[in-house]
Image 1: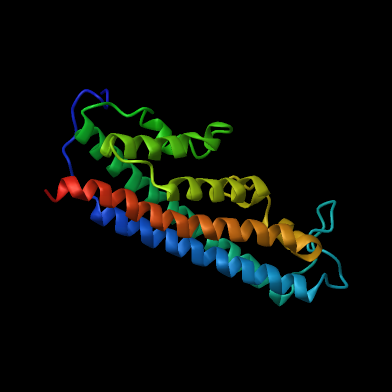
Image 2: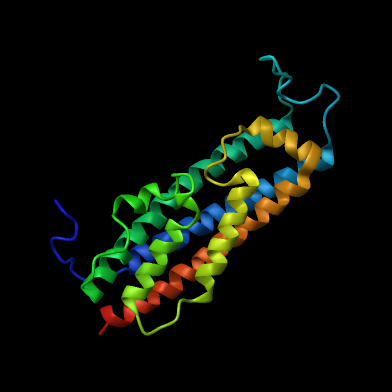
Length: 216
């Protein structure tokens, strides 16, 4: 069934916004912990036994600090996925409300709410475009909040530096980077943490715009 065939009913977004804020906060905290571990690894330095991944399928046993990073990394991945699910849930609710308020179909088809984050090239602009479209249809007479562009710029920096949701390396690869080039890791960490904070502010700002209509 065409999602544009039936006009959605305006629904409250308080609950989904609160969940998105919690998810962003947890993800940001997870990246703070990662950053702390990156610094700890850099300060400790590469062990005499070399890197965990020694090439040709050979791996040495992890020390306590490296094993701890594996746990921190795994927990961070789970919290990031939770954040993504909660954030997308908020976007979907806001998108429906924007359509109800404007009477116009969304600029992007519903599949892009999910796919735009993982499809190469599309993930450079479509997620922001969906958020911008939501705001414009919710409040066509109001300027786009600056925080939207701040959030997206920080997210892109975190992603292109190799540590976003699209990063395909394992924890051992990151450990090697921490031993030999922690500066780039910390730069990416700060960008992702900043994106989480900016995301919280953005969720609150855009939600407030729709609540003006919902609470009338």
